[in-house]
Structure formats: C-alpha cells, structure tokens
Image 1 (tube, rainbow, N blue to C red):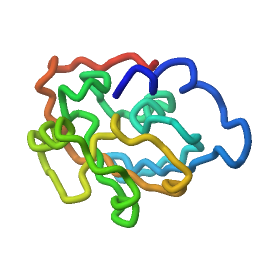
Image 2 (image 1 turned 90 degrees about the horizontal axis):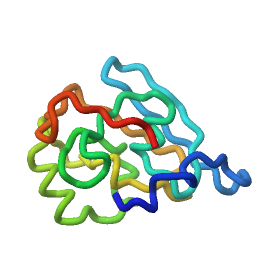
Image 3 (image 1 turned 45 degrees about the vertical axis):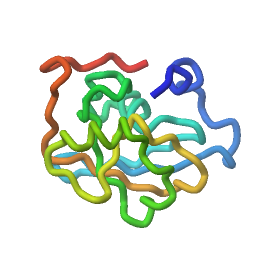
Length: 136
C-alpha cells in the first residue's frame, strides 16, 4: 500500500453516514467482529486499529502475504483486479483460494458496504519471522 492509506486520515471517524462502510472480520477461531469503517479505509490497518490479528509483517509494502484474507464471494468482483505484485505474493500464501486477496490492498468504498473477510487458519511470514508492525 502506498503511504497515503496510512496515517492521520486512517484515524478519522466517518464525517457522515454516507461515508460509513460496515465490514465483518471472521477470525481464525470462527468468531466475528463487525466494524464501522469509512470510505478510504485500508482493510488491514482498520483491523489493526481494532485489535484484530492480521499480521501484515511488511506493513503493506507488498513484500509478504501475512495479511492474506478470503473475501466474501459476492464482493470479489467489486474489488479492483489485483496488481501483479499482489498476485506474486498471493502465490506464496498457504491455503490460497480463488477469493484470496491481501487485506493491505483492499480500500473500502461504498460498493463494499457489508463486506466480510475471513482470516485463513495460517499465514507464512517470509519477511521477518514474528515481526508484527505497530498500528499506524
């Protein structure tokens, strides 16, 4: 992700209900968290701010696949096509599925309201074993 998705804007609450994008994260243990995000939020950083354990070892620089998620099937076609760099990283992700994406590359839009993303049972950290970045 480019730096413009991280930073101060990430912490702002929606200015109006028109900016609200609801997202559900399904965790590895099967529990789910419903979060109120906003248009422009990055799915990985939003998870970090709410204490959801998406690793994101490379901090969104497309150098790992530790933020791998499964996107709810009816939302897959509402996302932009993945860039080649994202596809390359996904090729190294364990438990890859057709609806796999890197959460650091998903930016919320109104078309994604009520999206659900599911964390895979495992990820593989090739970047720095055990490195977990601090939330921005």
